[in-house]
Length: 442
Ligand SMILES: C[S@@+](CC[C@H](N)C(=O)[O-])C[C@H]1O[C@@H](n2cnc3c(N)ncnc32)[C@H](O)[C@@H]1O
Ligand code: SF4
Image (cartoon, rainbow, N blue to C red):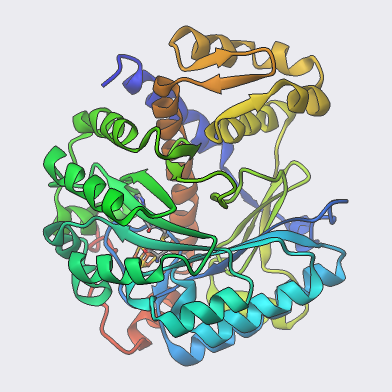
């Protein structure tokens, strides 16, 4: 572990927690103004067949009729943005598991394409949804990137993640991925490292499997643990060894580079021109659906985490947004510093155009600190990450997502009764996966 890891994490935790403080905002009833250029659209589909214990995204059990109600609301909300002048160039559908209802998903994608000059569409899925015919339909609906959540090729780890039974064992996943290759311009595989019980040998095995499959793109996330997921995770998976995280990341870099190039600090692409993760390419993005975040014109927005409230709001002609936070100048600079360098470089011309000379002055402590610890390299045209810097940015981005997860938790807590009822009505009993026992402190 590098010497600065603990202090860096302590500082980030404090700063991001403050930065993510949203307030209920009546003004947020008003949609953000449409930017001049087409922006990015994020569509949140919160339904899953199994609730994995490590996951702190906004998700509920899949329920067929309610899912249809929700997709209908999604399309209404997309139309509202279109009427307000928004146009979308890139679309990212995440979850949850957006592919729980292929017909509904395709109808939604067709709507976006009919009203915007869409150039790329990315969708998330799980290995049990890789039927060839359905994948061809997604491709025909304009999907350019399919992202499959694999997490690991170790059956023991898949079992501890409660994924083995529903999403398939390593051999089945391997076979389905091999069959899915070549259908989309980019096939991405999501993996997690530093899982409880994961050894270096298991990670080597995962890397060997990926190499044998030669997938287009791999996203390797460090395990992030939100307080609300900690109990369920510890119960079924145990605790991870933080001391292994840096060594594991180095092993991933050594293995994947140079045959893969870093598209971000945790996403690696085999070829140029692959479609990468969202939030890097464009400045503004609009999030539709329950529990979605937007960043438009220097302000962050969040939609309601109540699925019922969301559907009813949209049926009443309003967007799902219930919270807003305007970012100050320094916060916007920090956000750009984080997100741009996560993508590998912060170009001087980009900074000059947005902030002029103020950036170098206001961000002097951050710029100097990162250079001093050897995380960044200052070239003539841009600031770039060193391999050590890539690890720093993995930590920083993970902390950023942890703070987002903190917000998700608070908001989900407000609608806990509704989410529990929703889960209980779903076809299979949920037990208490992902919940703290009564009286336990997060
Ligand atoms: C939110 S899921 C949505 C797609 C799909 N349901 C799945 O399971 O892959 C997208 C990815 O987020 C990653 N993820 C979820 N929870 C995580 C956590 N606690 N730490 C690290 N990565 C996580 C997993 O790699 C997962 O594949
Ligand atoms: S990781 Fe599991 S719970 Fe989370 S979104 Fe994917 S399938 Fe759903």
